Amino acid sequence: MRTMDQSANGINMLGVKIKNRSSILYLIYRSGGISRKEIANKLNLTPAAITLITTDLINEGILVESAVEQNNNRKGRKEILLDINRKKYATIGIYISTNKFQILCMDLNNIVIFEDTVFTADCHKKSSAILDKVCTILEHNLIYYDIVRTRTILGVGVSVKGIVNSRAGVSINSYNVWEDNVNVVEYIQKRMKVPAILTNNICSLAHGESFFANMEHPKDMLFIKYGPGVGAARVFYQDTLSVYDFNAIQLGHTIADPNGAICECGNRGCLETIAGYDAIERNAANILSNKLTPYLFSYTDGNTENINIKNIIKAYYDGDKLIEDILDRSIYFLSIAIKNAMCLFDPKSIILYGELFENEKFRKNLYIHLSNYSGYEKVTFSSFNLQLETQGPASTIINFFFENGGLIDTKD
Image (cartoon, rainbow, N blue to C red; front, side, top):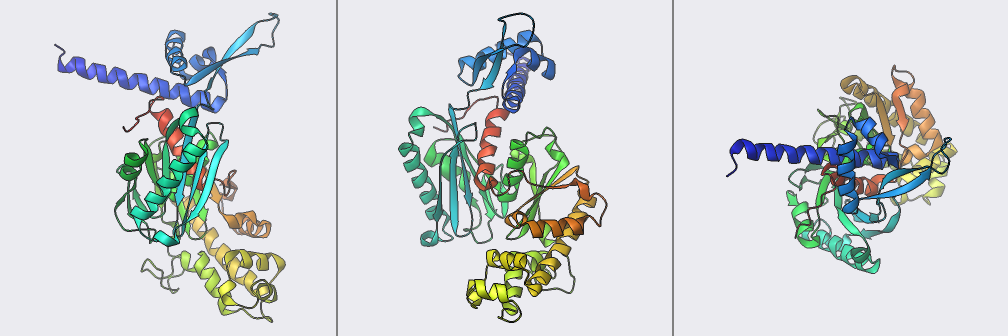
């Protein structure tokens, strides 16, 4: 009969084993091929322990070996490298927004197997109908692309805006995507029979940025997304890539102008009442005319209903003076918010993400404003701009797989 201490020791040893497997998988994934000797040196584990663990991972089909010729005087000698069996696995990322959802399935080489965008006008704000449509399309594509037979599905990562309890898998308040307190993870796991993770959309983007950039210390990063609102995320407390340790920051609801407009959150003068897309589009509509805004007037056929951020940024780039004034005011207050965030959180890097940063003029003017403040050199633009809406949630599943030492709960 095992004593309580023996049982506890058994649990602790299992935890150590999973942690070691996890560390090895992360290192191999980041390295893209590495020898057992290098693994032992980098992780401070014994060669015997590395051999034992990697043999298990090879037998489980998680790792594969490859031989690489060494550049030394010992002719013909080859070094054996280990890599993740990247083509064996598939991960799914889903981004659910107000009027549509996007789906992506990719392997661990980040090669897209399929992707789709589906509008949800027929099931607007109805969680059961939206999730049913998501799963139905997933089921169809997994069969059509022969994923179930040829790959191991690691799980489904889902992101949605608003307040999310990731550990419970519940969308608490999605700000009109659907009802409050929707148990997204329970629905998907029951239907798809694979692990699922739900995250706030900004946290998902931040996780994708840190994961694909191979950041070893994500807590040093502050991630800011601009458009259509302004949001941010960072890791608190732990030096980890776990998606559960990313917290959303309501940067768009910091006060920019105390005498400004009333925000939808109920406060007056939030940053989003100046820099949010709705505010920019509303301000542009108020001055639309052939005389005052000739470029925007041309792009919209003089109809305020045709005003959107894409037409506005084109008119801004082409030189509509009053449109420049609107966007420069947005840039001014956005730069102040970024500087205030630097002071509050003291990050080593700030990553900016959003479609307006694709515009050279907008990006340059923002950087000019930021250069007025100390620490502006910490600010850079995302290396994966506009790619992470679905790859972000997909990355949470890959990370979860590694974090659990390559073990998969099939949810049967």
